[in-house]
Length: 101
Image 1 (tube, rainbow, N blue to C red):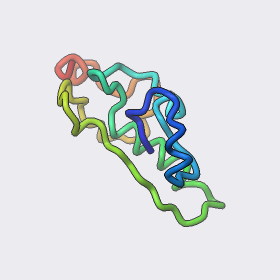
Image 2 (image 1 turned 135 degrees about the vertical axis):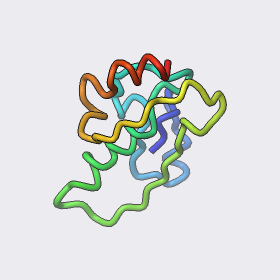
Image 3 (image 1 turned 45 degrees about the vertical axis):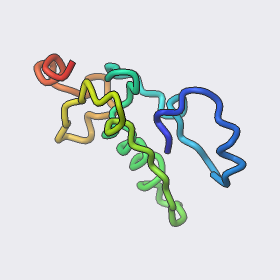
Image 4 (image 1 turned 90 degrees about the horizontal axis):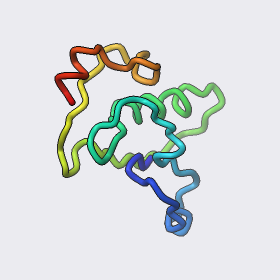
């Protein structure tokens, strides 16, 4: 899972990655947080929904390149305690979002 990759990355196949969930595959539609755009919490929830919760899934080995801990460090997305909201149309409370941005 590489949410910071925004362009084609053919090197991923050469490095042996079976599938790559990049920024396009994650299809984030929420508010942008700095240059990186996608909150790590969103990426983790997508991984949970698409892969971990699959009843037919095989064991997983996941490489997750978090992006909210990379420079530039701001703005920092608010934590959403209700993970079911993270992938919805209003992932953050308006007050928390305004404070973060």
